[in-house]
Length: 118
Image (cartoon, rainbow, N blue to C red; front, side, top):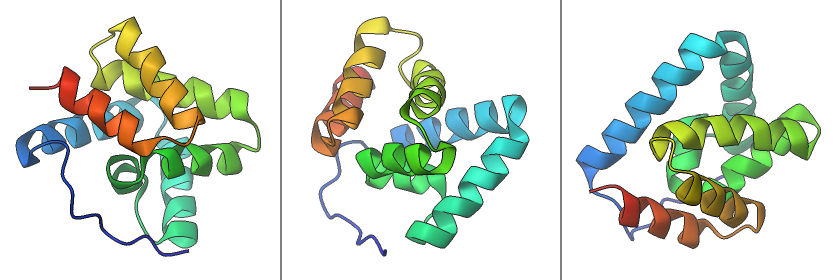
């Protein structure tokens, strides 16, 4: 499956780079093996690295985690940890983002990012 790039940007490039750096730093530091395997899975299945999938098609990134782990609990656990770093441990935004991702609502997730991050 190939993902086409969306033209509509919810966040600016500096904020996107900040998110990218925080997520990659966290994953490489805390779960390097899982990150490498998960990233390889996303590249072979979706032709995108996990972080790109998360920023461009967030609900698909969550679904990729479900497929990779084989269950929703593990996918939700890792996604929750990732989102805590993005939303600076704000529980309202973290839970709202998880609900959006689990519901397949990428646009709502992106709106949450745009609302929370400057």
